Length: 459
Image 1 (cartoon, rainbow, N blue to C red):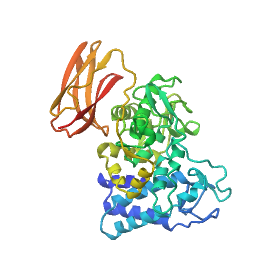
Image 2: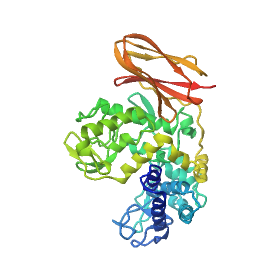
Image 3: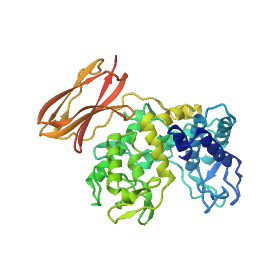
Image 4: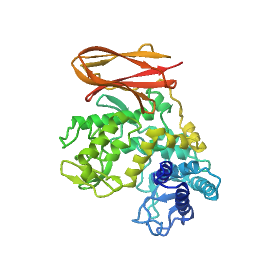
């Protein structure tokens, strides 16, 4: 996350490209030159993988931690992203690309399989693979399998992807069907780098969905859970939601829902904010609410602190890189998809996706949730349209309504209506001026009630 965030910092003028390149090269060379070996101390990793925690002063194993396959995969995502960002001809950037390739090509993913059906979670010098299970979906390790499948030097068998998907639980929560994983980070980490908007594997194709759409549904379901608030926690509602692994008043816990998992009233800002590319229309109000209402205890030098619990009046005192990194990356993807566009240029990523059965997405059903009884949105006509189309809707009572148009990346591109309307039928016109050909989504909203449809502009 840190390596990609440095690149984002350059794009925003927060650090010079020269300083950023020097910092990135120092980081990569530290990992490349650090001692690798099977010893219990004095090493940075083994078989090209790295330990979960390193001593900050020596860059060697600490706390008797495990050789972590998922943390190595996340590191390699940042490494490969740095390779594509620093594409200049000066010596530093040339060296960044060379070391990045060397680091990735050294990782022995096949060894980490230990002759099993999937990649193991960890290894230690003391016990080997004993006590560590196999990564089976659904969770944050999807990017691990893509990078391992695409490795030019130590690829794992294509069959391992089906081991990964064999653990999926397709379920229905609060009006949404999707592959569940209660903490939201599992729906976000792989998406920081891989652009799943327009591709799908066999599993998702059979369900008329994509992993991007899956994360969108999971985000909406997470919000609906907090609106329902079965635990009766203080503050939960349409603009205060988001459960994920974080600090809390009792320590560090993997909170999540739905289904509820360790929910004790603790809200983690990164949970909502890192879903901004999937559902900006509900994430941005949540961001403002957390800042406006809880800012004095929650916001300081480095942005939002890790977590807070309004029920007991608790605020975390620290900032976590696994919070701030995804926040920065996903906001950037929401702005311009630049991280996605950069990372998807990596040949190994494309190889991994192909071996995992990914192809161009077709027939994706955008789930709209339960239809509200008092608000009805019609399909636009004509559809597809070339110059203009009409959108009609009916409301059963006087209400403040808005109709907004979003592109396939979830970015709002136009507000078609935002006014007080009387009960009855209304029609708004959507003109094609300044819009590119493609798929768009329009959404009628009044308060916490909404309905959406898909339209197609085709000149």
